[in-house]
Length: 313
Length: 254
Ligand SMILES: Nc1ncnc2c1ncn2[C@@H]1O[C@H](COP(=O)(O)OP(=O)(O)OP(=O)(O)O)[C@@H](O)[C@H]1O
Ligand SMILES: [Mg+2]
Image 1: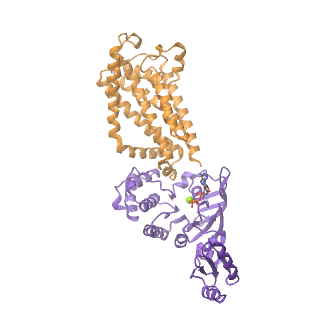
Image 2 (image 1 turned 45 degrees about the vertical axis):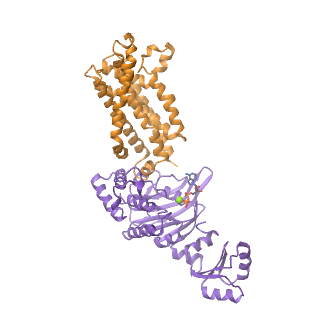
């Protein structure tokens, strides 16, 4: 395949489980060298899409090509060039850290000598060298995640696919993972990841799709998505423990102050091009919020605008 | 086939941790059989005409050899296969690699057969120790023992990947493997069974394996022309393999 043909292309991709539709017609294209993300809440269909791209699950309908090959008929050839970090770790807990890497390399037909050398390098890369001979059982969650990432790199893949690489990790462990992914990105490896953390999407992704209910709600770079769907700034207003109904009433009085208004159960979001001006207008209307927070708009806001829900319930 | 070997290596890596234990019990079991049943029960048997004029220990040993290879191999395809698919991550990890379901199947079967082979060889050594090996052809008994193991391995595998509850595994052990072991001419010749039951016993792969094994160890002629016994076991094994490959592919395609 030529270098500018898409690495992944999906047309009207659908996956059904019985009556339930997990993925309901997804179109997407990922180019070589891109860092591409799926951002969406639980049950959005992120993992299902990833598993179809990874050739471990067959689409119910639609067309899916990875590295120019058909995922159903050429799955083994595609998988040979992918590195996969599934949502749930699939490490062999009865083997050591080092053995996990070497045996996984063997599945790809990599010679023992090469496998051992790569295993050592990769353990260095994810800072687990001192654990090489420990059983996987004894690793912390963050260490297991790093080992899984190392394992996904053992075949020197063209693409690394990470399904929620940092879910459940503490901030320190998460930053270490991000740092490593960033390094991979700089080496030109194509990265595809799913997440329900908007900061992760913002940090790592050149381009992303927002997924909800098996569909793509919007697509673009983090900046583009924010520009397209929300204003530059946001004001969060809280009114002394007021909740849903009272807040809805207050929201009525705020009408017209800002471009968009989003009453949440515990606060009201005002989307404004200029937060300061909006806050001044709130006070001018005689309202006295107990707390006012001015901030930049994020992907979280984009998601809220698109679906009426927050990312993490 | 190289792919299957890569999957096989995984099971070998796990086996490396436990092999000495399995070889040890591989020796203990046959010794107990030979002592307890061969010599113990044999002491009560005066009339050996029905078993070809050999000692009882010499009669049962070749059959036990086949039965042991079968049980170890098939046993390796019960909980370990069910667990690899349901509880462990071994299959899930392999699935993300170029290995196809059929490679994963073949790798696991190869491992099961190797376990059976080791137990068969160990059994043969124990037999020699008990002086029941009277022919230079005796080591060839390993072949029918392994054919017996092969005849059932695919079926057991297919079953283990198809069931939703592990309960089925102990049911198979109790109501399939145990009857096969008891009524296949290992402990007593089929001629002791009522006439109408004998054809039923012909279905048992172990009967064919035990007869071939006995032929190798003590030169006792096989009831049927010997290739028929072998072909039966091979055909059964291939059918089981085919079924297993279908079942696993179905299970892994979601
Ligand atoms: N094997 C399966 N059988 C039946 N339904 C499934 C299966 N896998 C996923 N689903 C359903 O498909 C939908 C999408 O699931 P999926 O795992 O792709 O979501 P997700 O975006 O990865 O969510 P999460 O953030 O929780 O991981 C869910 O409603 C889920 O219940
Ligand atoms: Mg998921």
